Length: 134
Image (cartoon, rainbow, N blue to C red; front, side, top):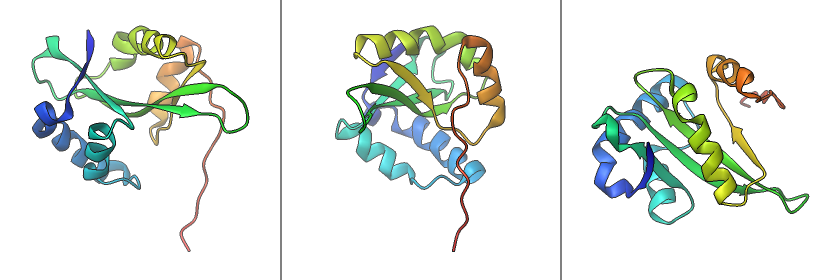
């Protein structure tokens, strides 16, 4: 079961996973940015404590829509070394979103496999982000 935890208590495990994500997908953030966001309550860290430090975690962030009054729960970072996390945790993530008053759950991911794994759960691809460095 996913539990909200203090990032300071799990930083060694989480930082290792964040560094792996950084190497694989080169996001704009640095691991220290995630630490700061969670410590300063701009995001929340969830870990399945029953999995005994398996190295899997998610970072969630509430994201207001600037064009209406809705709020989305953004799964900002999802890291799972075992695989199958979508099957195991999506109901809990959606429950967290409802408890926070969010009207939707969003994923921003560079991995098509994650997007494809969510389609059978009722998720749909809404945007593609295309960019070019200048």
